[in-house]
Image (cartoon, rainbow, N blue to C red):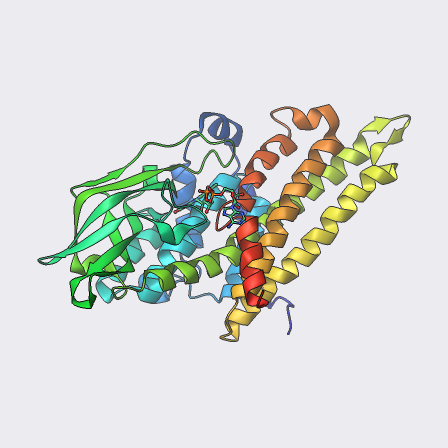
Amino acid sequence: MDFALTKEQDELRQAVLSFAQEQLNEGLEHDDEAAVFPAAKWKACADFGLLGLPIAPEYGGQGASLLTTIIVMEALGKGCLDNGLVFSMNAQLWSCEMPIMRYGSEMQKREWLTKLVSGEAIAAHAISEPGAGSDVFSLKSRAERVSGGYVLNGAKTFSTNAPVADLAVAFAYLRQPEHNDRRVLTAFLVPRSSPGATFGKPFSKMGLRTSPMGEVSFDDCFVPESMRLGPEGAGARIFNTAMEWERACIFAAHIGAMDRLLGNCIQYSRSRRQFEHPIAKYESIANRMVEMKVSIEAGRFLIYYVGWLHGQGKGTVMESAIAKLFVSEAHKQATLDAVQIFGGYGYMKGNPPERELRDALSGTLYSGTSEMQRKIIARCLGL
Ligand SMILES: Cc1cc2nc3c(=O)[nH]c(=O)nc-3n(C[C@H](O)[C@H](O)[C@H](O)COP(=O)(O)OP(=O)(O)OC[C@H]3O[C@@H](n4cnc5c(N)ncnc54)[C@H](O)[C@@H]3O)c2cc1C
C-alpha cells in the first residue's frame, strides 16, 4: 500500500486548490445568508472538469481513479469555503453520475451523463421519503408496467439539488405480475419535464444553505422503458453501490474542510492574547487543535484506504462505513472545538466557525446516519 501522491496527482491537487481559492469563494456570505445556489460557480467547476473526474472520457470525463478523485475532493474541500456547493457537486457525482456510468444504457450516458459532466444539466438523487429515512427500503413509491414503460406514483423528500435539477434518479417498487405480484426495487431516470413529475421548492436548512434541497413527487408519471436505470429489481444494488462511493468520497471533502478550519484556529489562537499570552499557549486550547490534527491524519488514511481498496477491485462496505462514521463525527467535533477556541467571536456570523459548524452537523445525517453506520459495521462483524 503506497499513498505517496504521483507527480500528476500532486499537480492536480495544487491546481484544484488554487482554482477553488481564486474562483469559488467570492460572495459566499451573501449566498449562505440568502440560500442562493451558485449556478455560475457550478458551471466553472464543470468547465474545470470537476464534475467528470471519475467518468470515462467518452462521456466528457477525466477517467480518474477513485483514489485520485478522493485526493482532488480533499483539495476542493480545503480550497472552497462553500461547503454547500462542494456537497451538491458530490451528491450529483456519486449518487447520480456514477450509477448512470455503471448501470446506464449507452443512450442514457450519451443523453444525460455527458450533460451532467459538462454542467448543462443537474441531477438529484431521490430515494428518501417522509416515512422512509434510515429504514429506506420501506419506501412507498410504486411503479406499474404499462405499454412502452412505467407509471410512477409517490413522494420523495430531502432530495439534494431537486429544486434546480433537470433529472431525478428515483427509486420505486415495481410490481411484477408474472412473479405473484412481488415488488422489486427499481431505479428510474425522470426528467423534470416529465408529465406528472414535480420538483419542489427549496427547503430552508440550518447549514449547507447554498445546496438546494426539496421534494420530488410523481403523480401518474410516465417513464419510458428506455429511462429505467439498470434491470428491473436492481434498485437496491444501485443504491448500495452509490452509498459506498458517497461515504468515502464526499467525506474526502470534509477532511479538506477540517484542515482549513485547523489553519483558521492556529492563526486565531496565535494572535488572540488573554492574560498577556496568545491563547494558543494554553494547553487546553492547544489540545483542541492537536485532536483536530490527529483526526485529519487518521480520517485521511481511512478514506484513502477505501480508494485504494476500490483500485484493487475489493469491496468496501465496512471500510466505507468506518471512514464515514469517523470523519463525520470528527468534523462535527472539530467545528465545536473551533467555536470554543474563537470564544464569543466563534458564535458570531462572519467568522469561520459559525458557518462551518452549521454545515458540518449534516455530515452525521446524510448518506446514512452515524447510528446506521454502526449497524453496518456491527453486521459486518457478524453481530
Ligand atoms: C444535508 C442532507 C442531504 C440529504 N440528501 C439526500 C438526497 O440527496 N437524497 C435522498 O434521498 N435523501 C437525502 N437526505 C436524507 C437522508 O438520507 C436522511 O435524512 C437519513 O437517511 C436519515 O433519515 P431521517 O432523516 O428520516 O431520520 P430517521 O430515520 O427518522 O432517524 C431519526 C433518528 O433515529 C435514528 N434511528 C433510526 N433508526 C434507528 C435504528 N434502527 N437504530 C438506532 N437508531 C435509529 C437515526 O440514526 C436518527 O438519529 C439528506 C439529508 C440531509 C440532512
